[in-house]
Length: 509
Image 1 (cartoon, rainbow, N blue to C red):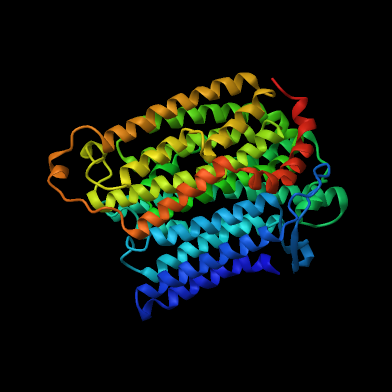
Image 2 (cartoon, rainbow, N blue to C red; image 1 turned 120 degrees about the vertical axis):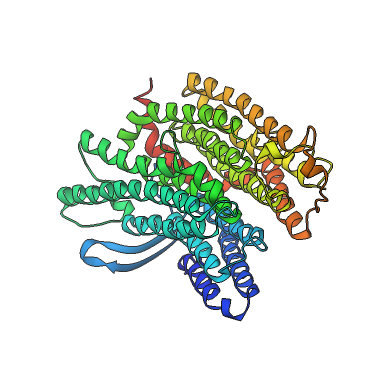
């Protein structure tokens, strides 16, 4: 019975935040913090109960816990929630970053506190629903449910220096990209259900039943593309990334933490959970194209990051680059690469969240994100530049951080399968060092601008230090002790790999 509460608590908490704003601006903050703290605690409780290192069994899903409730029996639609090692790790990551999103927006949000936290909580509730839903109709319901609150988050509480039209344009672009691609996936889901009904005479949206659907090669390929397009937009995969830089640059800090740390991971999760197992042969045939798209994303994201002067847009493009490694790993068919992708998703969520939070703290002091207006900040703000350097080098894959473990496992696991793609993508790490060092040099070193040199800039508060140091500790722990994550994800990744590998092995370039 814990699974539905993981979803209900954020929705109930968000509604309470909205209704209690009349009693004071602090009330919604505390309710939101308690809500996400409770959600995180439930996720950790499920983790402590164990049972995730189950014996893998030829791709058959093995759930540690399930919840099933009839919803629309006429069409075989149920409220079917289930959790395994992969979804558990994503739920815990969502709870953790949800807590930090509330904390980092503690002083940033000045208007409509209750409505802001309503949208924030409902985004997080929708994300958890995506990670737990096994009924395809329910999965799509939660997938689309995240969009409207994120639209409001960007449009109403976006970048303070932008006018309302700019924020609304960025929010609308995000909504159109994700809504249009979501409709493509809905068509693919309905088509899959019809194909299954024609083959079996039974209506069902149950994932486990749809796994066994017989279909022709052409139909399978088209349906796979419907899923891939939706996930590629959210990931995002070049050239479907156009919404991301604007959304990040206009979103409040909490919105950027959710976007980079959590929402992008729903796409990678969707590929692993649904696209590959439901359409293994078509995915195997499409794998070379997907991996080359990952390579393009690595280099394109790195180059675009280097050319940016807005520090937040720079960080946004780094996500395009890093998720390229995850895309390559997903289509290799290597269990080592799969587990590396899980580590990389968690590490990227932590490091990207840290960079966006530090960016928000920097903006609060300087009231600009233009690195041409910065420089010489190393001696002006205590702690913040040094912590920014840590997260910048962590994104490079510095040994001792979780990013290194994830990227090493992805490259090591991929090399045996696709050596050429692996070697080429490795050079992306060199480009990553270029944009990271450029960011540090432009913002924190060099000669201070006259406006900044004349200012007395406050150091980091205890709240700000707590948020960032917690992320530092978690990244280092993940770098030195990744085994708990590997143990938890081993069975789930092994099942997916066994379901997919036979098809992949026959369609390599």
